[in-house]
Image 1: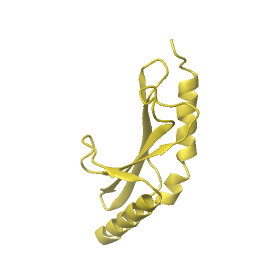
Image 2: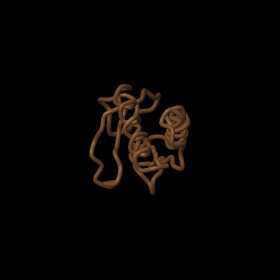
Image 3: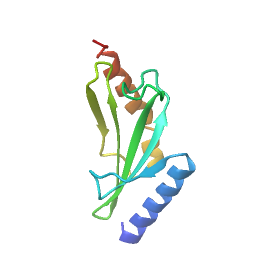
Image 4: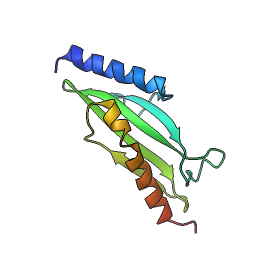
Length: 119
């Protein structure tokens, strides 16, 4: 894939994400990627976000040697006040295919939270 094709694919992904309500933020840990965040309703909320329901999913877009690289993760506080990072990578280059995997990520969050009750 040419650099122009990769940049076009990233630009199209950015347009789609923003049209779906994703917000772009700066990620100080991944200066090579564009980070997008969206909150999803889940039965279990992050323990430090008591005023907000659900958890946030972060999606990262970058150009990896002429290929679109997409990663996503949930980083949230468990009921026992410890933190977990569920990182999903080696994802397809198609952002629609990645978005279809969000239920898997959220199910992993719920499984982790349910195995880690409040002390």
